[in-house]
Length: 406
Ligand SMILES: [Fe+2]
Image 1: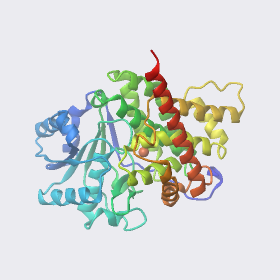
Image 2: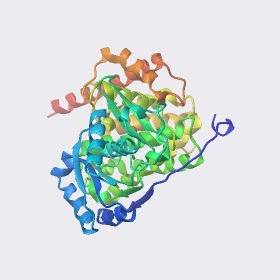
Image 3: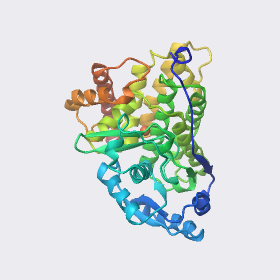
């Protein structure tokens, strides 16, 4: 696969990437330089309660802007939320967007931008349906977690409660943020469970995009550095929330892993987590993190050299090991990392084993199945789900033993 195939490959990012500890103070200047005067600030109630909304509004006002707030975002944003946001954007005569929050807020802002420019409902712009022919209004994306990388991706993920799926919108630079403003200080107060889930999501983007059929030299390079940072800093950020060095590197890991997406999609773990996330309202990061190791175990036979290279990027000793042994080491590492980060089991995330056939069918229908490093159909997905449930049972046993010990 890869360099020998004749499919045209391209890489394009229209996003200016700005980062520093304390970068939030530059938000007003960044928005003003895009000629925005009245931005819609898209966020959620958690950000409001943490005082981060005020921290974002201050520099906007200092730069002479007149922001309007839309703080209705919930995890796994749906069609209604995006469409209502677009109506609000129009009624308030906004001329730009600021998203502050996790992937849900940034994806909602992207969706609002698409509908504000093109009209209708966001559901009409599901990938493969109506094209997004014009660029969204100027959007400054300020991530407060280190995971989705949505601040630099060409995608928004929207939930359709009627079809019980999440669908992708984008695959074009027209949906990308104009500026990604990355301030690692915004993530220091994240609870360990959110650090763990979002960090595993970033690692999954890097590993899936590095091993999938669409990879190319640029995405390979950024994916490998993202893995390097995750290997060095994810456990530290989980163990020491206030450690700014770890937070900074995880913020950059999320950005790099987001860039690794290119214009394409991820692979089996995201086909599974996005389709399953439409069935039960589970956090995307934890769900994806729980699935990553079983997916790698299934996939490594398809691209053994690449999985061996992943082991090296994660900091594992591979000297003297065969390609196959090194590839296996990368899989074992991620199984262990999942437990060390206390990623919830699939049962804890709201799923049950009797849903495996349904979940497998939905994963097979997800467009991210295409390009997975190993051929996979509903039967393959059933095997992977069975392994993911099993790994979660080990976690339950370990927790019982821990509680039983004196
Ligand atoms: Fe993800």
